[in-house]
Image (tube, rainbow, N blue to C red; front, side, top):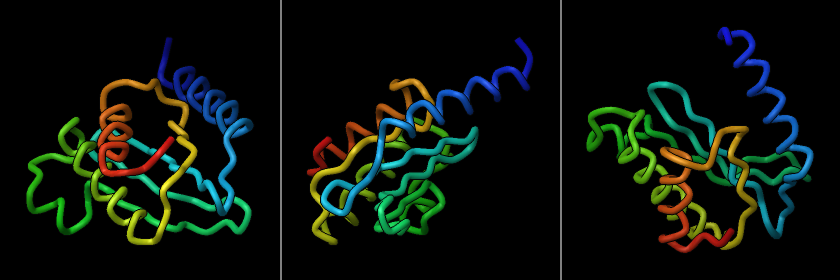
Length: 121
């Protein structure tokens, strides 16, 4: 399987997940995007198309403490930071959008860290 086929399969999974997952003002969508070197997470209200909270391994507080942004430890830190920012804006419950990726490794670490800090999904 070459790179273009893998990319097509990822895009199909992303579309399939997005057909089922929709963020509302009461329960916004927690979207996770991971690249090879970094990890990003956003909480999005799909009805208005607004990003309510965001965190990434490139944020200033995390950049100083992390050696690399593409690790499980970085994903945990991003999940904790995102959950803290969400609870500051009274967001307690979200719908999880794994972005077409499998629920393991960095995606799972981010999800579990945000659950530990109070987000429910």
